[in-house]
Length: 238
Ligand code: 6PG
Image (tube, rainbow, N blue to C red; front, top):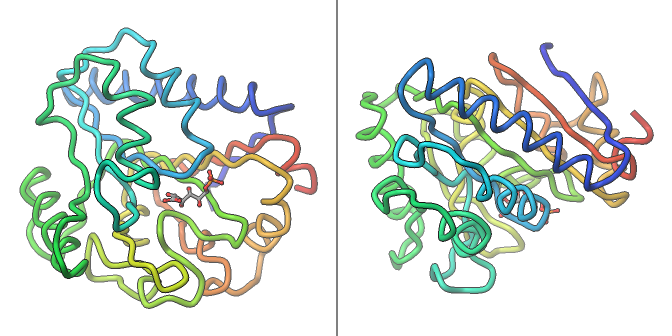
């Protein structure tokens, strides 16, 4: 297992270290391949990180932003991950609109939205059906229950291995989510996790043996860089 874990003293240090790692990998991607492709996570933890990224001087025309998951709500809904990232970061930088690739949430059937986003990824990365593209950076959070993206415990999305994007479900509410295999194909998977409420799930996610369906973050075993950044409150038992 190529996982590295860093426990930072507090949330401020966690965000600062996250920024350092993300920036280095964005700049390396641009230097090596002429562009950076990054998938954003939602929730609350990454918001200050997005605000810090927005203050950087990067060649934004070479950056492409995707989402690793999305709540199935309109783009202007307070729960929208797209809304949060646009307000915290993307609206504050001169990134071309066509470089922002939100998950669609305007189809009556979420499965059609998932298919559309998969097709968009296949076209952008020029991969055939059944092939997995390699994004440069996957930003991941982890819920108190051990979920990541919208791969929630004991949901059908966990068993989807032949697609890039599928429909997730949280308490019966639909989500659109990257599949575990797509996340695992990234060059760098970076988890940023904060707060004592994550401690219990982290113990199960990091245990040598436990139940992947109950703690879906265990399904993330990338062949590339696998980095967990934790604040002391979350990572003190590790
Ligand atoms: C979402 C996220 C989700 C998130 C975790 C942690 O849509 O909610 O993508 O996977 O990363 O739930 O959320 P917090 O950062 O708010 O604890």
